[in-house]
Image (cartoon, rainbow, N blue to C red; front, side, top):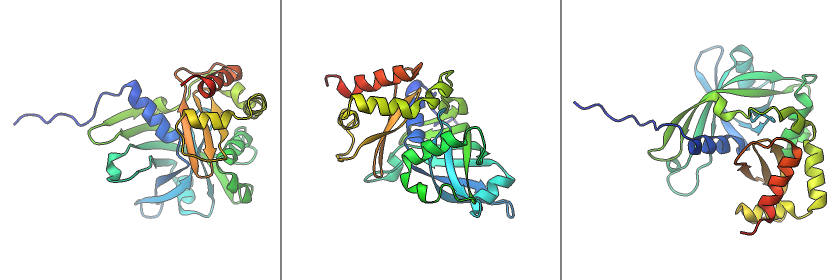
Amino acid sequence: MKDQPSPIRETDDEARKLARVLLRSARHAAIAVLDPETGFPFASRVLLATDIDGVPVILVSRLSAHTKALAKDPRASLLTGEPGKGDPLAYGRLTTQCMAEPVENGHPFHERIRTRFLDRHPKAKLYIDFPDFLFFRLKPERASLNGGFGRAYHLDGRDLIIQSPANEEIAAKAAETVRDLVERHPDVAAMLAVRLNAPESASWRICGIDPAGFEIISGDLLVRYEFETLAVDSDHICSNISKIAYSIP
């Protein structure tokens, strides 16, 4: 009997880019944790954002079952990727196995994560500062990408993390960078939406930047764009965004 060919393809740059976009463009995800009482997997839904290094971030209540589970065992899996019309299995999805790290008020990353989370989920302002809520950074350890039928890949956690020495500098100047860019080009978000073939909407805005790319958002719609190479500083990000928005199609 002949050996069956492996269904797993060799991971290439195209697969890595698709995986990063599926993770970084998700506004919500299914999360699976281990129930501390039974040991059974427990799945729920969480809002999702990303930290400056691309690590996914969730905001959860201490009273929820998945928060109590993460306090006992930090292992978790995230499922991201939205189906469209027709067979949902024909669309790309990413399962990311993570280690959860709590980020409570007073943590060095807390204010940065809070700002980035609210940029993506402004309605969370109603409860984000409640004492029974906290953030977790879900650091990727490994991932499984299914890009559609016949397109399966295994990825290392490092494939999903932005490993740049400019992370902290860009994070510190992120709000100022976006503000200055919009002041110089008031229509930049609308132009980006056109260039990226985003769904029609009257209220697109830039909601996040990092060395690897940026996001624009309008209501429940979010579009992620990945740069070809990592930006080295905030000026580099502005230059990249301007070129994308105002280049001749």
